[in-house]
Length: 357
Image (cartoon, rainbow, N blue to C red):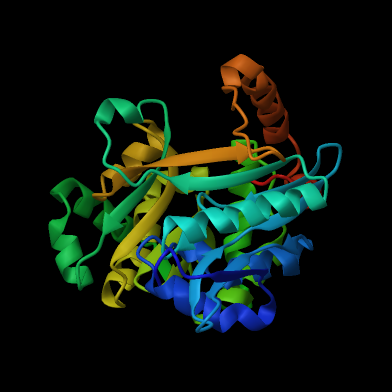
C-alpha cells in the first residue's frame, strides 16, 4: 500500500484476531508480544481493556498496520495507555510511517477521551549504534538460531558446553510442555525466585492465561532435581521468532547449573522447530544478566521506551538517581525479601496487575 491511499482505523476486537496475527506473522519488526494473544491474556487475567489499533486499506480491506495497546486504571496514578505492559516491547507495526503515525495519533486521542495521564510506547532502536551509546542503557538480547540444535551446540565455546554438561552430570532433568502441572511447577520456582529478588509476583492465573491465549505458540520448560522443580521458563512464539519473558531458578540449587539446562532445553527446541531469532529479554548493558545472555552469542538491541502526554508531547523521563526512586526501590526490595513466601504470593498477586513492568 502506498502512503497516499486512505486507511481506516479502529480499535480491534476479538473478531480481528486472525487478520491481526496474519499481519504480525509477516512483519519484519514483529515480536511474539505483538500477537493478539498478549492482549487477550492481559484482559483475561487482569481485566485491563484492550486498545489495540488495526489499520486497513479503505479500498481493499487489507490490513496495513497494527498497534497493540492496553488501557490500565492504576490506583492513585489514574489511567494510562501502555504498549505493552508486562514485557519489553510493544510498538506499532505498519506498512509505512503515515499509517504508523495515524495509529499513534488515535491512541493519543483515546487517552484524551479517558482523561489518561500518559501513553507509553516501548520501542526499539532500528539503527546500528556505537558501543558507547549502549552504556547504562536497557537492551534486549537477540540470538540468531541455526537450523538445528546440533549446529547451535557446536557453535558454543567449550566452557559453555561444559556448563550444560555439568547440569546433566549433576542429575538434572527437564520437561517441556504446557500442562497445568508444568504451569504449577514453574510457578512455584518463579514465586520463590521473585521473592528472593524483592519483586512482587504475577498471579498464577496470569501464566495460565498466557498459555491458553498463545496455545501451541507457547512452551514451558521445568528443570528438576530428584523430582523437585528448581528451574523454569516460559517462551512465546510468533512466526520464526521466540521470546522468553520469564525464567527463574532456585538460588539454593544454582551450584548445579539449572539455568544452563533450562536455557539449553528451550534454545535447542527452538532451533529444531524453525525459530530463527531467540529474544533473551531485557538487561542493562554490560551488567550481570547481560553477560549471562551474551555468552550464548546474543547481541544487544537498544530499547527506547517513551511516554507522551495528552498533547502528544514527549514526557521527559527522569533517571532513578534524579527522582530518588532507586533508594525507595532498594528499601522496598530489601523488605520484600524477608517476607513469608505465601504472603508475597497473595500480596504480589494483588499489586502486580498495576505494575506495568
